[in-house]
Image (cartoon, rainbow over all chains, first blue to last red; front, side, top):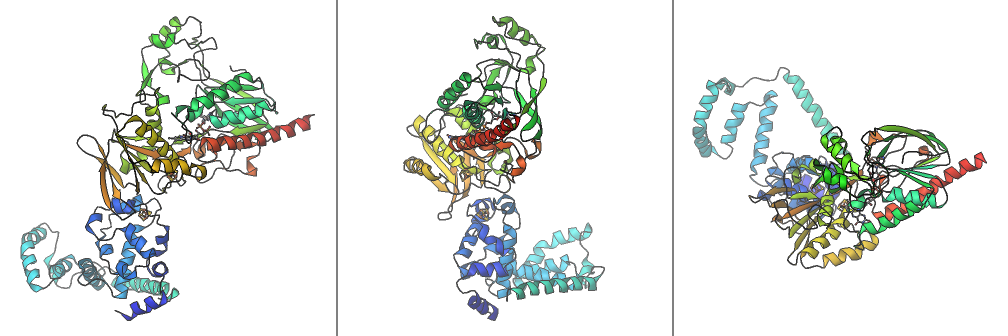
Length: 208
Length: 425
Ligand SMILES: Cc1cc2nc3c(=O)[nH]c(=O)nc-3n(C[C@H](O)[C@H](O)[C@H](O)COP(=O)(O)OP(=O)(O)OC[C@H]3O[C@@H](n4cnc5c(N)ncnc54)[C@H](O)[C@@H]3O)c2cc1C
Ligand code: SF4
Ligand code: SF4
């Protein structure tokens, strides 16, 4: 358990809802949920995960901190926005789900081997280098996400698609060597730095 | 009846539903001159389209009949039907109303014998039955209509049917030369009682009202249960199958920020009442009520408990996420309940959407300066001057509350015209 997690447990003892409101993006909306169940029933993947948004929001209010933050449900959200458009109380459900995932990640308590979390990290690392996603490198790192053997197997399986993409100019094999950046890479880095400052300030305000 | 004698001591009532009738009668019975303007060809408004009233399960026609008799006996009350207020100008104690009169093509000679209706062939959707049946081009809006006079649909004017209607009438009551007219008259105070309309169920896309025959609304269900209605009181589907397994979906449109902000207050009670219709019709009925929470306020709690105790009625605490259908057209309600988070997919014969009430006049369409709230209902406000809302034009109200509110509005209007009378004396 990370130090930050321990600190948060102490700070918000018995009040997980307050903790979510202070630290999770759009978390202040959770209390608006009236438990109607529309989001749960509208989610195309709802029956594939353990906790639907409706259930997660109830668990937050019931103080089930570990179950919520270590759930892999919010990582399963595909951002289809079905729940958001239907929620009678206009909760930004999709964003709260992502906010919860992000908070769990900050606390360092994401379930081991959670594939979406792993992919998100790869995506972020890839993006940060050149200010744009290098799809070739991202694709390949994705194949090798679960080890070298599986990576080779997946690469071979995808070989023909790759060749097809190169032929139709949908992919440039030269991108493997560094790859091209956004026009103003230092500007991009400034944007990210500023965003990080804003996020830090927001968290500092709540003493997080 | 289009000659209106009015002064600044006259009270104008707009809308002749149960609220407008109540306000008009209460004021007229204190001796005030009242003009009641109703858009439809008959009085009574939406309660005339209900089969039974909660909580007593008595028939609305009973109360309406008493009001109609009071109206007939009162010389202070002038009623104009097929008339719409298009403009109100002035201030408290001195308004001028502009009213557009649509032609009925039938005059006061009409005895209601129905010969014109028999002679005419053209048929149109019957608005009294929310389009669930057809009526003739010359018609009595419904059997208890007041005034008890036929109406000729303007769509047959200029056709052979119009001539047939005229020829068939033994009382020279059919007058095909009537035209739309506009009249203006003064009034000291105005009671605004234009009521409500059902929220357009087709806008609630996941429930498929516009796509599925066996998804209907609660107002349609009222007509279906009525022996005078389109199915002769039989609870059946469009394909003729008896609807024994009926689901009610509560808050269809209400309490939903994508649709109506407010709780419509009456639809929980309406569905509990309509549950009686189903269990009374079939011994092997099965009713399911999907709800967020049941709002059977104060004295209605007993009514709720009675239904709750029925063993062929199931309450599922869940707002249905969506409705799909199977090959036979049976609607299937899908969702997750809140008592255990169980995922369900339940097949029914018929789904009734408990659609809410929205104001019948759209926000931008009021022909008078008046304060409207976020929900579109009229807000009590000093800025409204001598214009007072009555009944469901002010909020989603049941009949009991609408009538109480209308009586209060009558008192407010009387105070205004009394001030005028004192100033003129
Ligand atoms: C499914 C359902 C079931 C219900 N069952 C019950 C029940 O069992 N018991 C109960 O107490 N309540 C019930 N209600 C509620 C009840 O219908 C209302 O309380 C009642 O209709 C309110 O009457 P009103 O006169 O305010 O409005 P309305 O009945 O809407 O009357 C308004 C009148 O104004 C007229 N009008 C509109 N615009 C104009 C205009 N511009 N110019 C002139 N005239 C105009 C309309 O034609 C209408 O005649 C039910 C409602 C629903 C939806
Ligand atoms: S749809 Fe909205 S109000 Fe309903 S349970 Fe989900 S989050 Fe809560
Ligand atoms: S009365 Fe019942 S069904 Fe109607 S909006 Fe309110 S809670 Fe929903």
